[in-house]
Amino acid sequence: MLSTKEPPRMGLITSETVELLLCCARTHVEPATAERIKYLLKEDIKWEYLISLSNQHRVLPLLYHTLNKIYSDTVPKNVLETLRVNFYAIAQRNLFMMQELLKLIELFKAHNIPAIPFKGPVLATAIYGNLAFRQFGDLDILLHKKDILKAKELMLAHDYHAWHQLSSAEETVHLRVQFEYNFLRNDNQVFVELHWGFTPKYFAFDFDPESVWEDVQQVSIGGTNVSNLSPEKLLIILCVHGTKDLWQRLSWISDIAEVVRVHQTINWQNVLQQAKKLGGERMLLLGLYLANKLLGTSFPNEVWQRIEADSVVDSLATRVCQQLFCDIDSQHEKIDELSFYLQSREYLHDKIRHLLFRAFVPTVADSAFFSLPKSLFFLYYWLRPFRLLGKYCLNALK
Image 1 (cartoon, rainbow, N blue to C red):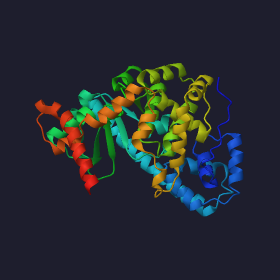
Image 2: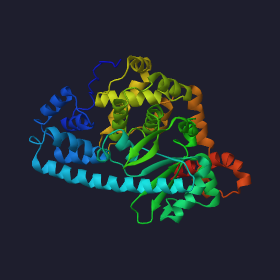
Image 3: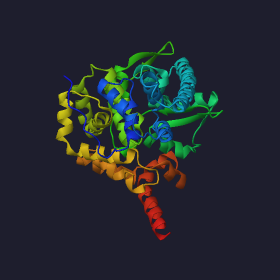
Image 4: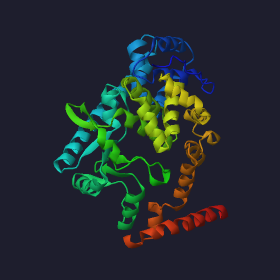
């Protein structure tokens, strides 16, 4: 049973231009929202700002789709034309990216490397229902960790180069503490992220990426069947990703809203249990609450009960909304990353682990500073805090 609770009005969002963007950042517009859009179009909309904002938050296709489909007679012709040109440019780019993704999936398949593409073209097709409706800038592919170096060699042999050139020591550190290996096609047209996880080690979120392979589904993109994440796993991953990146983009919230809209049969009890077990329930609830607060997404009562039982979720959502559309120069509005991460975790031991991991888990910067053989890798954990101390002392002196 879905809750009929109305999403609370965001007092922090007073601009009619921003509100219009929020009303249009979805694939399906409900009657009440349609009426609100009709009213907003009579107000003083800053059209140039709206177009810029929609592109910045990667929801321009949704803005154009809604305005062109229902309100084409009301929107200024030059605005609609600008949106139309951008929409078709994005659609063409998405088609190109989808074709490249299918080539890579086929390449990995030919070399016995299982792959699960996620976000990007798969999310656009399977969730938004139209390849053109979701803006994306790269291709995300999940592989088994044991296949990463083999896949790396394939990428290098097929017109790609590593985004960061790593020494042997740096690569060893990278593979142990990070979650993705990035590649750029030699013509600079395609950026690919090969994942073996979803968060860096310092984030202290113990989601086993191997578990997603247990209940993969099939989805057709461009007439080809590819593996896809289950909606339950996808929802958790999207909410954790949004939190990791401080929910700086509206499209990530639209993703949550669209997944919930499309998958009416989501096993909510399973999702909540998984998130709680992983120590990521608050991150899940934050993503869901933002989808309701900004886009009016409805949830079952059991989800609402969890949200209302955790007052920190509302506090975090308020911080997100304060910075989501703030001026780029308003530094006081920006979210403090560390405090946000700590507040987003419900268990004390996860907060402590996050702090300890930040202090002791080595990074590529550490391996670049101290080049050690693999046999002495453990020393990086002891050298890192001294390097950080030196760095901060030097900054303080400056």
